[in-house]
Image (cartoon, rainbow, N blue to C red):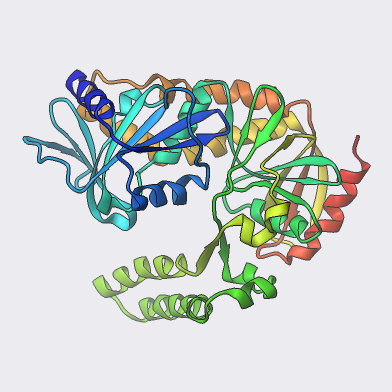
Length: 385
């Protein structure tokens, strides 16, 4: 794989104009020979973090119209990925479109140079690469949301779809300042840092935000109303049919339902003045849905939350781990230190950041009425140190 690294270095040295993204000084990403559409692609994935780097980038991305044909290629999990003698390729882009990305898996966490065909629509696993790079530098990427409320920094974490965004939305409606949603970066100085990437909102959430919903284009509102009903109809039809048609319909219904959302930049959702992006962590909430109607808030230990989140972070890393297994199948001697060391690093940093914090578990029905979340949670935040 040495020739790939050399080829990537030659491409970087020959680059013309470039655009940089800087994740709060933690990870630097450079788009080589950047076109406006390329910059827009990275902005959708990383948020509006454009800033000139005063250091060498940790990750470089070059978009090309077509990667040169390479042969022979050996597949792993066809048609997902393949390899030549010296390079590993992902073969699918956004929404499964056929597009190739040259990803040096062994370099993730170090200087990682990625080449991606433009028709891919995004850079596959880019955020996972960024997170592995941050982790190797002693920064913990945590699947969480965060906000500042009454002078306190609140970190909200839990399993995917557990209610993190709902708590953020509820408190933002009461004047809280947005730090981040989806991924929060915890640094050794005790600070948390967020990314102003678009927030995915579902129809039931928008029903509780009528002013925002009214601002959406009429076609978007119609789509949000129609898709859940279409998914229900498809699922019902699958129950009445048999054989292959029913199997295809059962797979289609969840795909249709997952389209019933809209992505909105936090500046539009909360207002520019409400974007903090940084803060100190004073309290941690662990959120989860349950099978009762009431909202229950109970004290817990930060160490307990740290132990739970080890499994959550492993789950979030799952798609990258699948790629890593395919890479190692194709290159039996290939290793990536950042991926191999990730569980141990996460364990240590979770304990370091969360174990001593005041903490509560918040259990709620799903879907939840957003306004109901505030008072019981606010009571424990205000009562804390």
